[in-house]
Image (cartoon, rainbow over all chains, first blue to last red; front, side, top):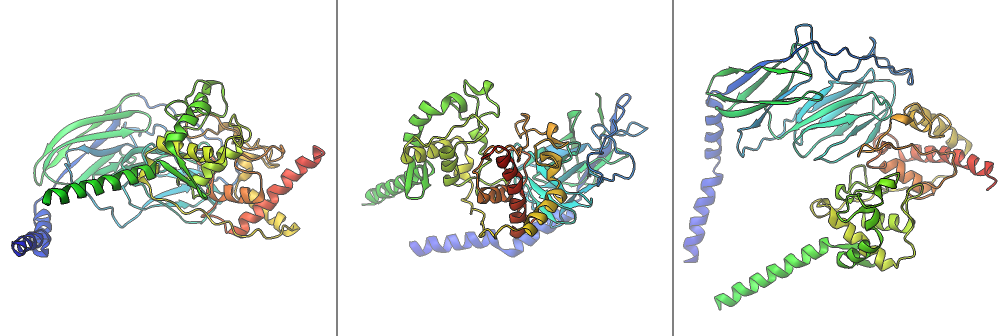
Length: 241
Length: 256
């Protein structure tokens, strides 16, 4: 009786853990053509004029060109920078491993580069101080661990965040104008718009998704989209003040 | 027979579960074991007016206090012996209750029995799930203090400059640096950098070892960062020795 149960359990375990089965699954996933969602994020209307940042308190802050606030950065054709576009719903219970490649947040000219950095949960974030002055790097998460470390020039620093959070404000208390955001996702389907306002979410399994665009000052917007295998779906967002 | 075995298993599981959950309701400070149940009664008598019934720092007196009472639900504590962002040790909370927090509304609760203070620690920990979920942390190491010297003070003074301490604490340590006015705590309330020349006692213990610990751990929930990854222990002692000269000058001026 007991032997029979053990045998059944063994067969069952082998079925679950057999390497062939795993390989077959991986191949099947790779073989099925994935979908993508791409588009442009625009700013409707006249973007507010950025304000000059006075960095006189620290002569070691050398921004190169005169530094301005980055609350809303919009191009001449209305393209909106620093918007995080991501899959907010539709991935089910899939879990995703963090990439081995770390994300990078640089402090340069006493500003954060990029202004908004996005990464996966438990992915390493290399915080780099390229300035000749000392910063402190102080993320204020609502759903992750707070930390606050001083970082002199050239000293390496590594952070990571265990839980999804969009987005964690980060600041340097020593240089109070330094504000940025760290967006943390439990999956790899996110993008941050650059100067041209474009984004692309690649490698999506076919399905129906809620795609959300998030901006630090202008809020969030969501759209539902259904994509089939091999399809590239166009999707645009427009923010107003 | 089978039934008995099942009953035994259930009982064992129940005992284990109760043991685990009661462990989470306990505090351990030296040989003292504090109980959250007893701590609750003490909390409602002594602490509730400032820290509030939910432990969120919104007690009846909170609007009149600056700095604000601690919000225990976040489990973010200034005075710790653990690295930046980590939970405090039970003994850290016990020490804060015993010592009080200088330059704030938090008095010393030394008049309470040691057992009562340990009970309070156990109850305060029940306000945040972090104490049940996160593994225990090791405290930072404080190596023996090297003797102070003119060279050490000089190196400390240079570090005070290069670490940009002056941007908040002021070039003379008076708490009036150019970034001082912009500072807030993580709840958004304005917060003042410590005036190192005031002669006022430091919040987390007034000793060289205390300052070494503060510089290493940082004061969580405030703009004061941790220097653990940036400086070697010897350099932190140099800073401590320089800060001691700023503080000694204030005491001399006061004729103390």
